[in-house]
Length: 498
Image (cartoon, rainbow, N blue to C red; front, side, top):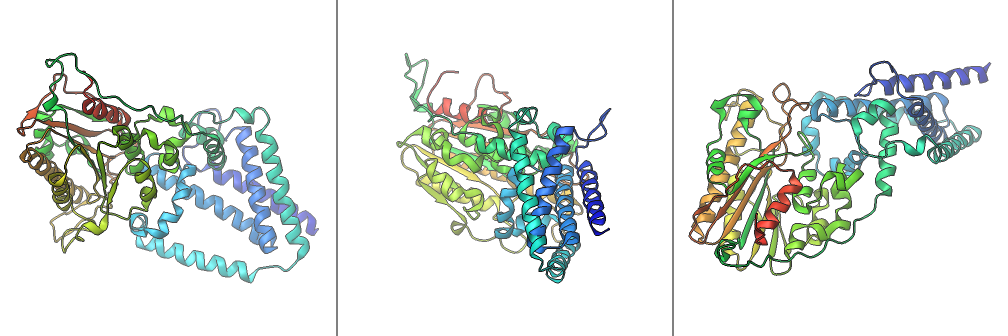
């Protein structure tokens, strides 16, 4: 009888697992109400392996079943919350950020309501206490759990080497694969495909274009100062909210005087700064990255020769500026490997004062950037990542922000003012210079912005001659990917004709 009850409990747990996974968005649609047979098989093996691991740990059938289901429920809830906020389900690389949650909790937990954080803390404490209380010192049960885990993992390994499983998820299409295979099978398959990826061959060195005559290339116009501003959550409010009264005057003026401007077709929405940052710095399109596209910083050390500072060469002095802990996303290791000679971090900036928000202001960023630009001797790259406009946005009676959009507008106007100050400050230096200013992604503002809508952000590329005058291009409106912006900058610096 006991054996029958145990078998029934296991089958019930398996059915519950399938039901829970079916709730993960995007869900199966059309004629197929459930995931594919291959996806269900992989899910069953994964659930069995997880169940076996918990049983080997605690020895209790009930606790192991509950913990297995709890893990899957947690993944589905997290994935659905991400899908609603950012427009995509969980990917394997999100799990690599777990450590960052503990090192920089304000970046993540501030987006979660206080009551939810409290419930999570209470539930975690209760769960650990329950595991300890229901621990069963039965060697047979622990051994059975270990055997179940080993068998399930063995079945997974064998299955993945056989058709049709070998052909699953060979190209990145996260939404389609979650819909067809389920959340946890897709997480596992994408991680495996990522593990199988290899570093590209070293990038060939670049050569400055040799002009045929003075009419083709004016040396005094070649930038010897390149300032790149990756602006946090910067987007055109007119496009975001459909209100022409929200026009940003400095952005409009920069477009009017730009060498080139347009839409920057970033892939992320509301987050994933590192995807845009990597593409602008390293110049590799997502099609080239394959499964590395979801968090290219995880493998950036193997691609350092593609980075803009490395390609500009040792004659350029490159500085990376970011008023935050450089260990975030591993920038402390990646940026020096990419060719940056100096990292200008949070210790260079005065913390924001009362009424200035949570993060270092864009005004403080502009001050430091112009100070570094003025001190620069010889060809210099200043790549800066701002942070003031990092959400969440909230009403604030002290500043007059009555809703989330008002809060965002106050910060994005600060970014707009920074753009004007930088252009004026660089012009005053009277050096051939180029300023590239772009948004890393659109903001995720509940009820105001839609992750299923357009994702592009604005960029402007402003060139100044040795007298501080604007140099305008002929075909100025050009829409680009972030990697395309990398190559546009490199072509200008190298003097390649359009």
